[in-house]
Length: 66
Image (cartoon, rainbow, N blue to C red; front, side, top):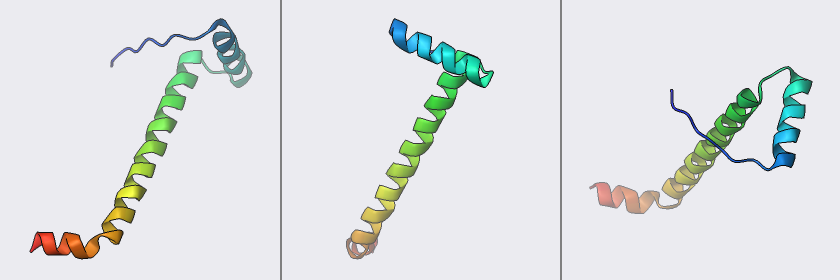
């Protein structure tokens, strides 16, 4: 496993600590969940855009494949 260090303001760190306390999780777990959610969302966005472009340019892509 790799380690990543992020810098938070005092206010962000306090807010993260409060959320961790309220949810019974560690601040690190919340941060990891946030990173994973962002990666999933970006993967889905890029995939949808790729599908849209493939449909939009299907004729050209078919000609290039011939």
